[in-house]
Picture 1 (cartoon, rainbow, N blue to C red):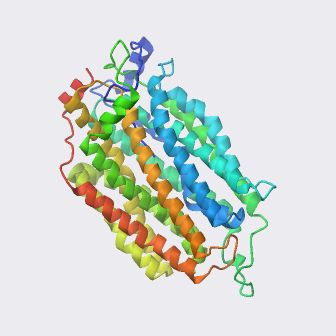
Picture 2: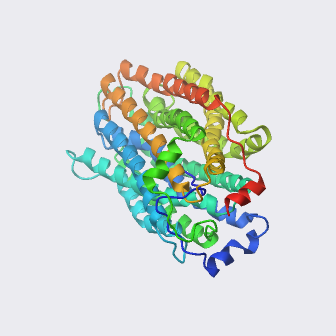
Picture 3: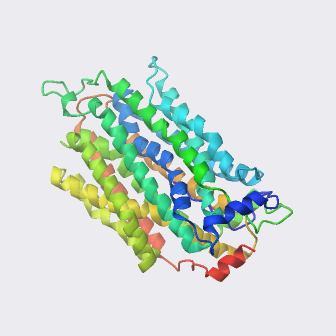
Length: 492
């Protein structure tokens, strides 16, 4: 997930003077003091749904698919996950650079990137779940497609989230639009896990492991390939549908504060300024750990339930509990964020710490559902908080440096770059630990070493990363939210 921002001169940003059409779209129902209509917020939020639908399905089921359906060795799965995440991370600064150098068109400067990526990312996702007829090069097949998907998802997400700062200069309205986006993205996350999980549920379950099977015997449903193929097609269709609604409902405003010359700071110069800004550094480093913890928890939940406990028949119920809890609690966290402040809201992430350890120690059905519910609460605030804090950080940077607008994509793309890189390392190393523990791809039962490793990955690893991230986040002052007068001055 990403959100992108407005405030500083970007990498050779060239922006022509605002067109009459742009002025028209900036007015209308949203003309009063930067107010955004419900319709515009809703359509903006819908644009983020497809990436979250796909990411949810991948987070919960891709690792299981690669290990037990495609039957790729764990070491190769580690390379697939690591390579894909690194590809997405590397695409973030590249996307920021290219988008900031692009010229405004009749559809805006950011919207053409979203629309142009849509058909290609849908195809890449579809073939990611396709089982090729050859077996010797499957690892290369999935590595290539996952890298392609992650890169395209980045080029889709960077301009989409950058629209936040081109919707309105009003910080409260930006936070409101972010809350709409986060809520609908959580709905998309719920949709992805639900749709994909229900379709492929016949490929996994207790029926695949009979009592008389040997520990190393492979037991894959004959319908597994077809079921994953159908699920991939359904999820891929969300890209063209939601992108169309985004285009029809959100008209990108021109940036009135862009210099007429169109020449700002160079990309590397701008990047150097952003990474030296202390509030930004603190935010990035803290969420390196927190976001990696959430990714590890998501990636290993299904494997833990399947191979380290007797919860394989409750996987879909637990996933739905997590996501329903996250979706329903997002408006509550937005209220807490506005009422008590963003730093106090961060303490909500701690809620999942004792429960993650409890699940690893006592993997019983009632405990599992309680853990799933509390984890959903924590995941919601961990996803909402950084995207609510980033606009404040960039406003703080602008007030201190007064470089003008244009570095929004550098701030956000570099943030996503670092968080994806941390996720790549965490998932790559953790999956490699399964290989060292002796994980057998497609096996009905795993060794005791694998079971212990999965318990550590579901409990101790995310717990330690969350605590480290929160300690960093809570140290030092937080950036001040600019007043409305200052917000208007930033736009001049």
